[in-house]
Length: 104
Image 1 (cartoon, rainbow, N blue to C red):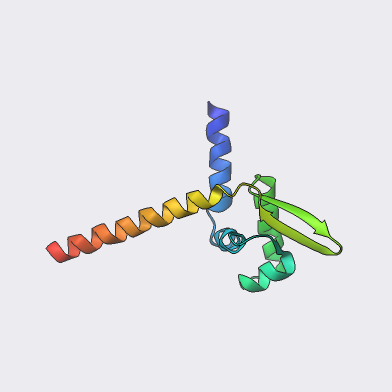
Image 2: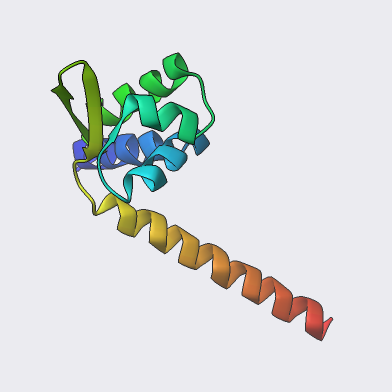
């Protein structure tokens, strides 16, 4: 049980970082080269590569080489469901707070 909890926490930690969330959102639309990722998220290549490696090591991303290009894609697109659920929770929280302000 403890191992499962720790493994879940590692995956959640791997996505719970703003730069990594930007990368995941970018990869929502399919595979991208590192040369496309770092300018799209407005980060340095070395920093972007570090975040890509962290997510690959946790099993969130998969990479392949094509000539000199390194391409990344979501290994488990189900991670997008997690992101979408978080967005849904945030919208609900904003709505609830807005309702409270109207009442108060």
